[in-house]
Image (cartoon, rainbow, N blue to C red; front, side, top):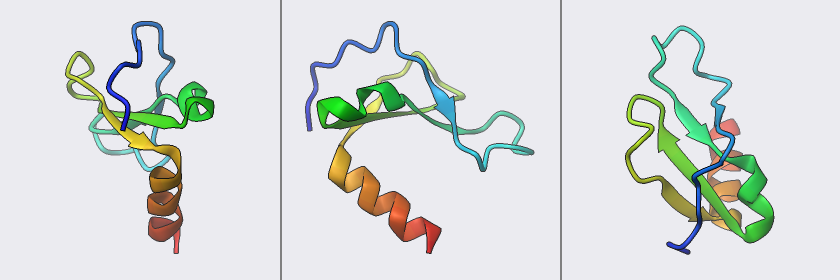
Length: 67
């Protein structure tokens, strides 16, 4: 995992499962996917450090939870 992404100007998207959770959501910054890293953060703590996942690992996780 990379730890050097500048996420200062990242655009964050909330999970589609966020509705009805009082804003307690997982957010991701899809524009970083081409870098090979997917930044993920907790919407309740947007200033906290983001978790960075390699794109293949994140894709595998999403595919697994969608089954």
